[in-house]
Image (cartoon, rainbow, N blue to C red; front, side, top):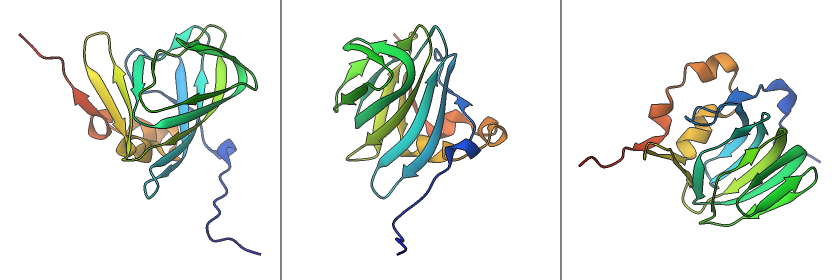
Length: 159
């Protein structure tokens, strides 16, 4: 029996892309599905050894399953097979000393997902346009994306 609601995604055909966020060197991601109708994102994420993300706040619920390696943030550490269930408002700085690969599921009520806080005071707001732009793209296609067109940038207030 065929199910028209079923989508099969083979992520072996999709490369990991470098995260286009300052302060996230050694971090890679691939958006497997960005479902605009339901404000859901399914992706894989990879920390290189000694890498981290900027501090960020969730505007979505997130489930992160650790496929391999170890990673941590303020609330605790995660090893292979561990799951982090994060609610709206979760505020943390994820990092890995050894490297890790994760499967992530984001679920939003309004298409807003993450606010990333850079050390310079700039806030990068990642919503559905960001994830949709990077859904299923090649390294070459990703290089052609201007992150400033798919991330809302809030500059620090100047005196």
